[in-house]
Image (tube, rainbow, N blue to C red; front, side):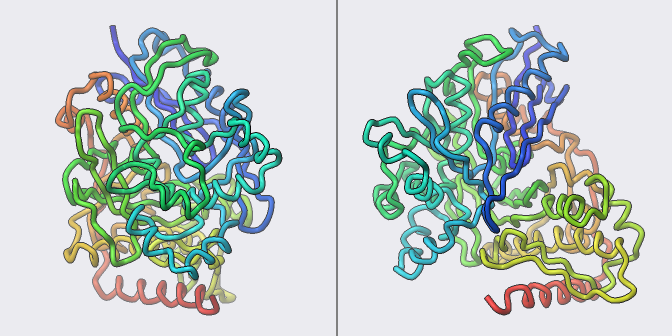
Length: 498
């Protein structure tokens, strides 16, 4: 009997369900989009009910294809948008407000007040993270203080919360399980990065009651079983959970110290495996948990840097400027011109992420002339994605004190061959794209499969991981230096008055 792993990849703009067989092949996948909610400038929300409905619809669509029987599903793996925070009623499972999305900047003033109070050093030492609205802690605080009826429900012990993985585990198990894994917990600013437990001082600083939060567990092992999920039998074990970027690192089989991957999604995120060592960045990167396997006593760590708006910039070009009809069209439009011709697009549409950490920055397009065409704006957009990643990679190299050898790439935008070539040229390094570019899905499946013994050990996973294509750098050092100089000037202009 063929065994399958069902992956639920709950992302920022939609949910993907996928089936992977024992040979590591993604046999089918279905994605369901849901609405983005923008109540005010800089605010981003999701409806938890819409998130859950997108999960149900995607899984139902997968099962209707009859690629496998429900009884053939050996395990379920979950991967998710990470810092997004929500609260729900312990007894009814009803959300108490919209979820606050990782991109949301509404807590900037509160975070600034903590900086002024001199708490940033404590937060970074304990959690590995910088003090920024990006992370979950300030979002939980806002929800507790601003959600209707929460205070009364808190007094009655009805309020619980978590990141998206916790919400999905709760719903998948019929309200039986309130857990989060170490990778998601490490993105809240509330977990001690060394002890892997909720930190009392951080909880007090952000005014978060401990009883609100889920129990922290490893990324593999049985976390619960399905109960009452539409279209699936009860009793399927959920044995792998990780935040999307950590799942992608695992899915790219970056198991050795120094292995690096970049995922091109709504944002763009680069993680490097640092093994059991917590590397404290001096270049404004983050220390995070990469994963903790059930049978391993110690966690594996990573350093991370990310740009908030990458694939989202292409969506804006499509939906806001209406220069293209679908996201994939940007490759052919950008290919109509030889280069950016001086046009620079800094896509700080929700602030700038690593290594700049400028939440107040806003997007700019500069260098326009009478000769500027749509293709130049499209090319500047692809360049901007690659150049933001270059900023992160150079920061990693400063922390390491040496040059990285290469980069594994994945995510939807990695299908864009022009973007991948630009990325290779900008960083002056070779890129490797896997045959399964949905590395978040692969990681969720690999973790869940490890959890039920479908694949025994990391060696078995390396054997099923395959390369699709390599992209080699082609620019001269002078051309690369000119391009970077122009980008740095655009960044300076964007942040000049902040």
